[in-house]
Amino acid sequence: MSSVFKKLSVSKHSVDIGLLFAVTICATISTLLIYSIARSGISEIEGVGNSYWITQLVSMGMGVFAAFIISFIDYRKLVKFWPLFAIVSIGFVALTFTSLGYQREGADDQGWIKIFGISMQPSEIMKIAFILTFSYHLSKDEEDMNKPLHMLLLLLHGGIPIGIVGLQGDYGTAIVFAAIFGFMLISAKISWKYLAIAPFAIAGVVAVMWFNFLSQFHKERILILFHPGTDPENIEYQQDLGLAAIKSGGVFGKGLFANSDEYIYVPELHNDFIFAHVGQVFGFIGSLGVLIVLAYICLKVFADSRITRDRLGRFICMGAFGLFFTHCLMNIGMVLKVAPVIGVPLPFLSGGGTAMLSMYVVIGLVLSTYSHRAVTYNVFYDDNDE
Image (cartoon, rainbow, N blue to C red; front, side, top):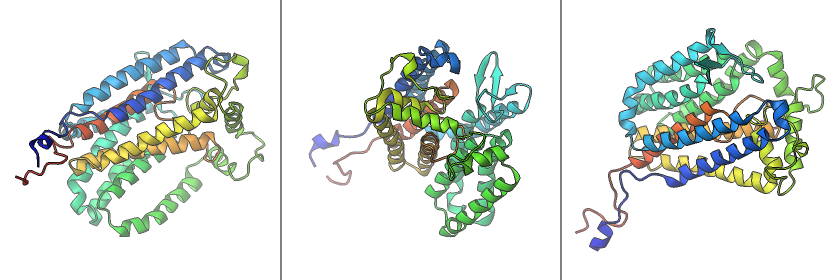
């Protein structure tokens, strides 16, 4: 081939600009949405002041910087520190069971800590650590993973974070960990025999949870989806308000700076129900646009998993895909009243500095696999074609 084509190669440190740009669009929209809530009459009810959108803006800036820096760090070197990640993340989560832990207003779980006046949700840190440690575990054990003892150790690895956040009462995050675990396992060389058994095992776990761990309140949140309008305690009112807010936006929405009395108040509007505010501010067109960007992020992460240089990179990307996809599915399903209210934020859109920064760190890991997928590879040139 011509020597011209020999020059056409992919740089070792190329950055997936499309992915980074897409998540930053969502983060920017999030900051604008929270700003519109802070300046409206809703803020007096919700308690959302200027500090919320400033926190979101600062977290976005820190997140972009962190993701960009991580993209230059070889993920293969990064995972070698897996014992440190595991110890630190579990240590922070353990603090939620001490006097430092508290239950945030509007939440069902004691999953927050405050250190030096800064509030954080340690389970967000543990998601990053789990993706790294489990990716490393799978990459080292993939050839033997279908042997009973090896599979048992993998199940134990996945069960630890699920069990810990379950003890906190954070069942939404427990489901997210289970989904990350499942997507990563399926992307490995798991035997069809385990896949055939999985539905029965999941059904058994659900039954045990239903009869032994879920409170009556949690059960009613699920049952009301099948019998809407029959709840005497009005547990579904938050979802009804969310649907009303989305419907009120019409086709093009009311705009970011509508009169405060035009917005419909929904509890946790700045956080778990941010998609309801997307609907009333940007309307159907804007909501569809946000969904398209979120779908692009998920699909791009999945696509990046197909071009990594090794299975470790593939597992990291699939863990990230499981994280983003599950969060989007559960949160939007919750707002649209096809899933129970379970307290899972919408990636890069829901308010919360810890969640925003941790999601960017996960994006940074994906960018690292993209940047280091090969030293170079020629698009048209074959090294043997002389």
